[in-house]
Length: 186
Image (cartoon, rainbow, N blue to C red; front, side, top):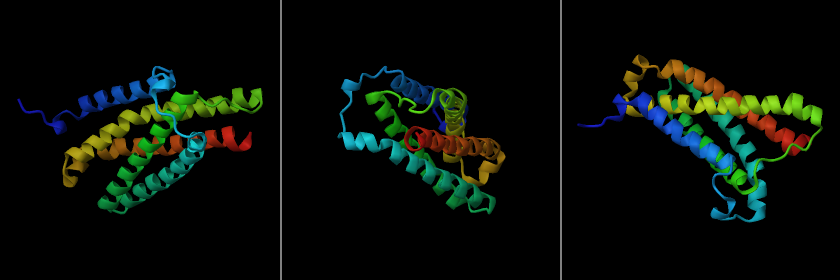
């Protein structure tokens, strides 16, 4: 029996999402001992938050520009920008998880009241949206990669893509706010 990815997009979405989220939670919860990872120079590890803030800002720009491109009917530009956004997301996540696996999550350096009533809610929403985005992004990506462009309007790509892009933008923006609270404001 021949396996065709286009016939199994929901199942592949679930499988890839489960694997991805297991890797993320494994790194964040310390399932991967820091000693098993090669250690980059301290300057590189210390620069990861700034690099990730820049990556997030560029990703916000590429997602917004991709959205504008598809609204204008420029499918090729939309596709290129969304794939660029995905690469930026993967780069962000790899760098973030590397730093967290080595050093653990960054402690909040500000006042306790700001931590409880501002920082934690923003962080919680950011993390929740990032988790929700994973299966949505896989789904629209798999639809786009397994079908000809002219067939996509007859799928859920547009409907789910709108939700995914909106949540992705908010998640990236809140990630920049989290960065600012950890490394700039306090």
